[in-house]
Length: 221
Image (cartoon, rainbow, N blue to C red; front, top):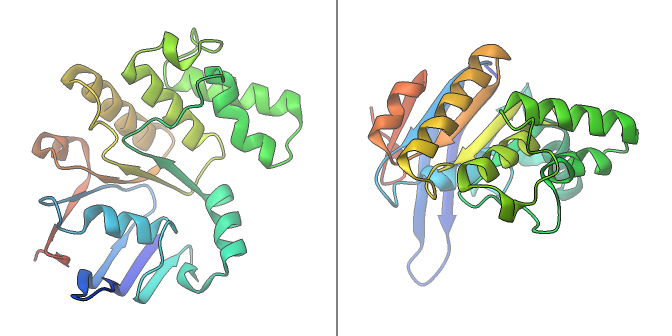
């Protein structure tokens, strides 16, 4: 298993505590394409944020590549996110003044890789997602679907162990959504990319290997 989740809980404190996740247990194999599905408020995105080190669980373990990442210090979490994980969200989060190429090689610059190497690697990844002719385009010169593909290339450029996608097609039309989901499927099959994706669209089930259904903070049996 590339991820093992054991007795994971997340409670948001307040006058009336909100138990967003209640004793979650499951595993994900290397190379799997898994969808987290369920109604709004079921705990999908909360779970993704615990797995992706974007939030800290109240209790439980997230064992990734044999390591309990919950026990990491903030510095260790930051380094692990940068080197081992990739993220794609609803919003593309592209800086308006950066070209597609610059957006994608930005994470590599932080990793102190040689300039020639990071430009080459970013170009290759943009070609992989079908944007070889858009390297020097700004976000305003690209469609929503193209911008999301830039975001996917940026998430993959560090060769992440796991790609996390939180409703990546929520802001796209149906045709662009199909393009993105087919791209995820290709990446999963061609390079063995492990993907964990939150989605609320029932049609997306046909693209993934397995669905983990959540309801009221629990995995539905």
